[in-house]
Length: 146
Image 1 (cartoon, one colour):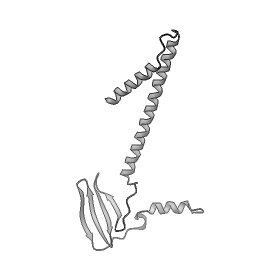
Image 2 (image 1 turned 90 degrees about the vertical axis):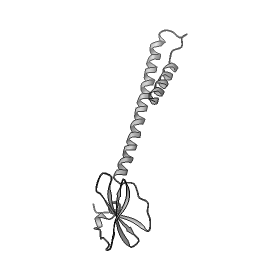
Image 3 (image 1 turned 180 degrees about the vertical axis):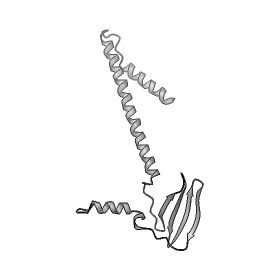
Image 4 (image 1 turned 120 degrees about the vertical axis):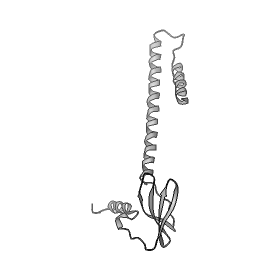
């Protein structure tokens, strides 16, 4: 509501600034009105473009967060080996803690330990973290097989 009021005041200010001088000739009135309408239309176009660009940026940030495209903080003692979504907001995560592996559940109510694994889980090479980055790096090398 405040935005609409501020927009109205701004447009009124643009219209009053472009209003003709009372001492000017009467033929100047249609030109001044056309200028005010043009300025208001230009402002509306710029404002709409700005809102659209901001919406695209927020949307892309949301998608990157949902698809886990944002980099994770690196830690020498703790690594995420794999994770899988089991619900809208729930995940099961395989962690490497030192030499051991732990399976934890992550949800809206927090993180819960599911099991400390006695044997290490061997992951296939294609599901290892960074497999895509390594493949992309190899494709970008000069003379790489495509």
